[in-house]
Image 1 (cartoon, rainbow, N blue to C red):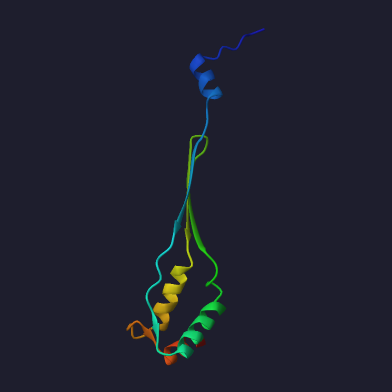
Image 2 (image 1 turned 45 degrees about the vertical axis):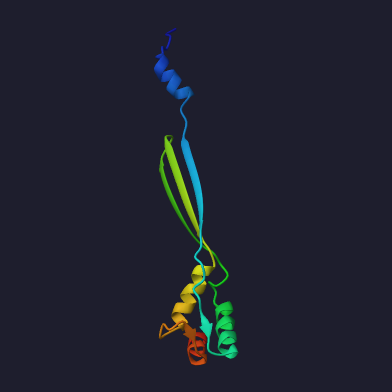
Length: 112
C-alpha cells in the first residue's frame, strides 16, 4: 500500500480556500427640475400623460458583476429613482426650454 503525501501548504490552501465576495447597492436619484405650467389644464394634461407612460412608475436598475471563480467576486447594483423619469418627461414636454409648459406643449407631449 502506497501512502500519498500532501505538502502542508497544499493541504492548507485546500482547506482554507475561499472566495472574496463584495456586493454593493447604490440608490441614485436626482432632485426634480423646477417646472411651471401656463394653466392648470396644462399641468393636468402633463401629469395624466406622465402617469400613462409605462416607465413612469418603475425603477431602473443596472448591475455589474466581476468575478474570478473561487478567488474573487464583486457585484455592484445601481437603482435609479423615479425623479429621473420625471426630469426626462419635463425636458421632452418643454420644447422651447423656458421652464414653463404651455397647454400646447402638454398636448403634444400627451400625444406621443
